[in-house]
Each structure stands twice: as C-alpha cells, then as structure tokens.
Image (cartoon, rainbow, N blue to C red; front, side, top):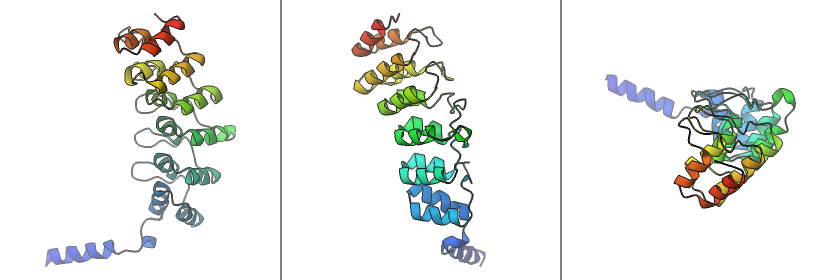
Length: 223
C-alpha cells in the first residue's frame, strides 16, 4: 500500500506542467538549450536575470557553456552579470576564455566600466581567462584578450604555470600552439619565467620536441 502511494505521488510530479515547476528552472533550461523565445518568456515573467541553479550557475554562464550567442547577447542586454561566480568558481568571462568563445568575450569587453569583466577573478586553478585559452590553442581568443583587454600575460596559476608554460606543457606544439606562443610573446610574456621546479618554457619545449616553439623562444632570448 505504501509503495502504491509513493508511485502515485511520483506520477503526479512526472506530469506536473512546466508552469508549476520552479520558474527559474525554465530560465536556466532555456539558456542551456539556446531557446531565445523561452528565455524571454521567463524573463518577462519576472525571473531574475542572475538567478542561480543548484550549482550557482546563472543563465549567462549556461549560455556560454552551450555556445548560444543569441541567448548570451539577450541576457547581456537584460543586465546579466558577467562576473557572477558559480560553485566551481567559473564566471561567464572565465568560462568564455577557456572555451574560446571569442564573440562573447568581445561583447563583454564592450560593456560599460561598471559592468566590465573583473580581471582579478580566478578560476578553480587560480588562472585567468587567458591561461586555459592558451592551453587549448584558442588563437582568436588569445589575440582578442592580449589586444583588447589588460589581462596579465605573466599571471602564475595554482600549478605554478603561466600562459606560456601552459602552451608548452599542455599543448601539442602544433600550428595553433605556435600561433599562441607568438601572440603571448608579442604581448609581453616573460620568456624565462620558470615553473616551480625552475624549468623554463624553452627547456620544456626542448624536452617535448616542439621545434618551432623552441625556435621562437630562442629568438626571444629564452634560456
């Protein structure tokens, strides 16, 4: 009898209309799916643009994760916070850098000063938007960040690595990482800033057989 009652309750919840569920969930679902119409319906109903889910993720962060540019821009237009910090320390700005969402980063850089990305915020590894972009070889993103923002190209993360070290240590030495190396060197990356063991980017590149990056680092007076 008790199990029959439990199944009956579950059945009721399984057919519960969307309108009866937490309204903020509709907003987050719409952002994650890239559903602009549903997103606007949720916002027009009075759901806070920066309301969070169980992981403290905002709709803007979910739009970044899903690469939904239209939804992202709609949320920005509604005043969404680019510096809202999720439980895992992601922010829309930091995640956009890590995922190479260049158009989204550009839109955030165009915001007025009071809404601008906070470059002091760090991800769970103590890094900036630039460091994971370098690790993954997001060349257009790196070019934007080094050209249009005041991001620190010599920031050292919790692993003891700079963006240049991440290019070499975690990259594959291919064309994208070669291009990334050129960009950060041009932006003022310290070619001889070593890791915690005193190993420089050039030494790491030589160990990994990254010939073109070795050439670039040697030309920049790497040791």
